[in-house]
Length: 430
Image 1 (cartoon, rainbow, N blue to C red):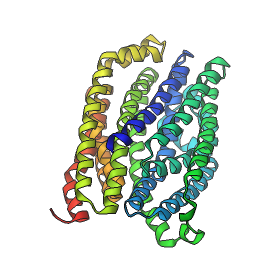
Image 2: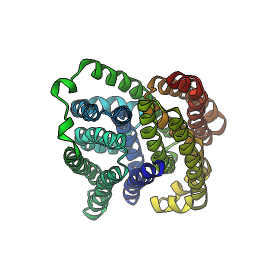
Image 3: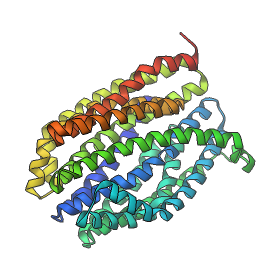
Image 4: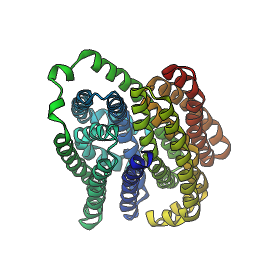
């Protein structure tokens, strides 16, 4: 069961960092470090928004899986419609708020001149994708909650495959550069949303369709919002950590900022690569909670952690061996290549440092233990900020990468430490 969910979703999630690699490579081939830095800052700011709303995917997955474990198909559909309504409204709000994001975000990131201009161009265009992009979170959450790994793979491939093709065509083929990359994302999100809605609507069992009163049931909405609130804070804190990482890198100059942006793609590849098994943990842990099956829950934790560490070790080894070649493919600037090579080891290590955090996130999301996730994330974020300030004074940008690895490891081990107590509370002491 773990492999049936994890393998297709690992392949699906791999298309997202591949998209990041392609976007960075397209802009990197334009030969302007300011454009690479602008794309990195814009991507961080948009992730700040979109990852904040990642609860739409996470909470939907957990609640649908638990409803499935209770054999309640009507509630499965009701959860989806609630999440979709929130997604559409939130998407419209994001578009309206883009001037504030530009003003506050660019100032916080310390972006100036050509870097700020490039980031602004990308942000304004990509904001148009917000309603469709957030709806795709709800769609994917339902699909993963049902354990439909193949459908998840198909939808992610449609979205990111369309995006990759259009980025290359519009960005390089037609010569639209950064604007072409942004428009490619907008088109791909809309195509993916339309496809996902069509597939899900056709799979719904009409005999178990929820009434409007069931969908807008106040206690159910309040439960969803409480869960969403904790996950939103956790997601916001995570993206704040990456924004802080980029902001600290900005202080080392355009070349270091560009090198960090390229190397951060190593972590993104590792993260999405490992998310396949975290997704399996979400679905099976959620179903086990719904069915009150402690044995299934424990096996889901053990299997996904073992597989996760195996894949993380492979990923780290791959980037240690081939990382220099990957960097050379992503930029033609020799100064950026040299700078990236100086920190390649720490970037490759992020896969092993972060694997336990990914797996524990999957377990806690499936079990809907959102408060613990929130608290451990905030503790780890405080540790990261403190370490980054101190270690950069000693070792510069290398100290920043060391701090990032410690932050990733701290998230995983703190959640693992409190897991036995949470299991006893959920299932009763063994």
